[in-house]
Image: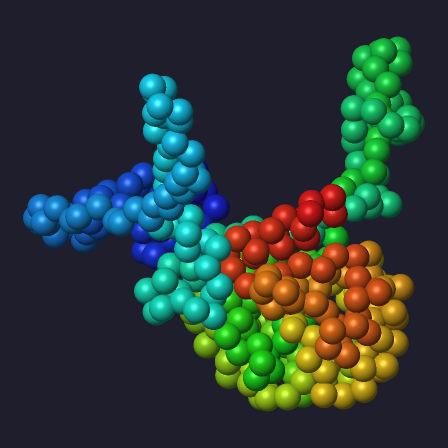
Amino acid sequence: MLAALDHLDVLDPRDVYWAGRLTLCADPEDLPRYDRCFAAYFSGRTAVPGPRQAPPPVVRSVRVAPPVPDPPSGGDAESGDVRVTSASGAEVLRHRDVSRLGPEERAEINRLIALLAASAEPRRSRRLVPASAGRLDPGRTVREALRRGGEPVVLRRRGPRTRPRRLVLLVDVSGSMTPYADALLRFAHAAVRASGARRVEVFSVGTRLTRLTRELGARDPDAALRAVAAAIPDWSGGTRLGAELKEFLDRFGQRGTARGAVVVIASDGWERGDAALLGEQMARLARLAHRVVWANPHKARPGYAPLTAGMAAALPHLSAFTSGHSLAALEDLARLIGDPGHA
């Protein structure tokens, strides 16, 4: 808990509460005990034992082996194998489509999304720093020799510094993406909190392009999403991906935001504008960016094929095509952003 607080604001009661809850509680039965102890220690309230709660239900899937033909008369009958596997409710929830969650399940998923650490893969900088191996550093070697009486006993070296690449997220907030926009924007907030606003840029796309980096810089996810909702003028509207991508490249991407960056487009690919324009701008983006990743929540549905005009125009220019429909899919997206070899 103390190690977690080193990275948080110790004067914020919510940070202190969650640092303790996430590190000290290992079982659902620990939660009410932790709440009572936290209130008693930090607020001076009397810790009153609460009623013991029933353990959470465990989902079990049972698979019975196919029936075995009756053995010949006189033989010993062998019973069929019954294999029982179990999975916790949290594991099942990780793979649930966020568009089908209830209020309590959505609140739990939102809490887990806030814990994701999405940062782009590192890149080699041109600036050199002291290193154990690499090219010789004459200045540091001479200064070290002067401290030792003029004898060059130790050879100092320097090598390139590594820095994370810029991460750019373009989140579709049109009407067809309404069931997933909240979870994807919370994912963007977690990315901004993990890497900082200097390394992450977030935009919403629909009928207008809106920069959301400042709004997502708030510490509290709910406060950040309220600020985002107030800033987006075209929430649940139409989709003009080609025109909005062109505006992004003209205003931000060509000037440096997309150069050498990992760009993530979260959209279902429905395009009301010219699909040919989207294809042209995707080719332009692919030339500027280091990698272009497209997250389509519908990709996980059985029988899905990228047949819409927008997806068909964008697909040839993508480095990776993934889904973003569940917590597990968002975890995979975070790993894919940081590791190009992850599939």
